[in-house]
Length: 484
Ligand code: NAD
Image 1 (cartoon, helix red, strand yellow):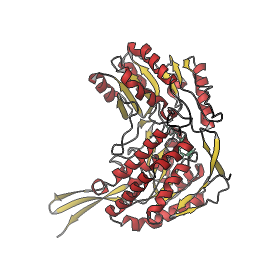
Image 2: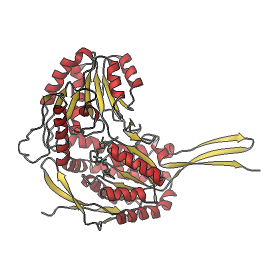
Image 3: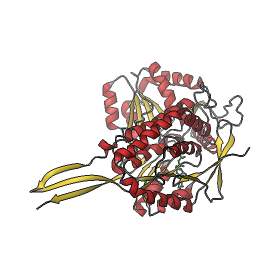
Image 4: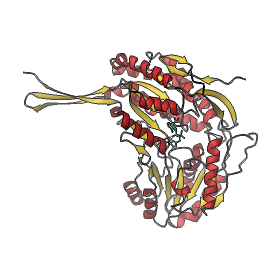
């Protein structure tokens, strides 16, 4: 059977790229090719930028409340298509269907937050800044923005930016991950029914050529990037060179510390979800488990038992606790890290290398894996593995755990499980990462708080969503007036 080819969405129409380079899209649970995507070109990007530029002025002069009404309609349409979007997402990305549902919910929440534009886009004013002189600051849209996004959250991540850019009067281009282009294509089929003015919202599929064309194009005012740290650094540098606004969110190596006074039984489900949810392919996933003091043996025993009990399989099965990783290449990369951990003399206490799932012989599966006695300077304790591999670094004191966190380079998220308010305060006060969970294993800010880390996990100062995003997508124009 012919596999569907993902098309670009430019100027309100579905258009094929003239590219001859086609990529395969996989169902990672089955290990089967299910679609194709053309790796777009500079010409595709130019077409999309021109359409977005042409649409800008009329959209920009449309009242904010009218712009918000498009988003209200979009929210309703997404609610009606909620389950089909989640199923497309799991089919191409592999994550469990319940997590996919959570992702679609978070996508919709960004639309809901953005509709507060008439409050959140307001400027400010002060009379009499000097004798008979008044001053006002107005937030104005800037032009055409683009989002370049990763493979692990193919539904939600573009919507950390897109609704805010649109509602503030900018026009937009999304470049989905070439590994998982079907979810955003499904989403844009719904966008197409809403009747946005042509060119206001566009999508170009592809890989590096599309990214570079967006970075080079003088018609692009700013870039919102989410992906790995090396790519984030590249995007940040190139936007500096070409004079674009930029927010570039990178990779992570998150540490979850557990104090002796933590309630282990109550914490176990969220600990397991932190490390193994989405097969460890979340930027907020726990990567290092750091037991503090004498909780270590009991914690490790309980955590290992819970990890062993997890059902690994097709994410579309409601009983599955962990799906496959997204590609065979990524599975091999994670396997390479397990070999590295063994070579570094960490103690492999749960081995997921040869995990088999009945009836899915070709799926990209890995079983839950745990290394004990990991040392802070080992590669498996420093580098982002992005898979279901847990490294346990035993710490003597809370101070050791904080030191461990603050010497990682990555500074995305950190979590502490404890019954002590004093320990929690010290932890959240001193650690460098900027998304903190206290008795929470996935410290994911909701749409009305900013999402993003520090250090090597984030380049730029305005993060994803939250109130500050209204600044990223607007320029504050100051008007000083005297009427004689
Ligand atoms: P990636 O950096 O490989 O790709 C991200 C995007 O950049 C894709 O659209 C891809 O086409 C493009 N790209 C990749 N290499 C490029 C290059 N050399 N030149 C130009 N463009 C390039 O990331 P990924 O593997 O898709 O996603 C996983 C990574 O994303 C992990 O590191 C994860 O921690 C990170 N992530 C971070 C956050 C966050 O909030 N900080 C959220 C989700 C994912």
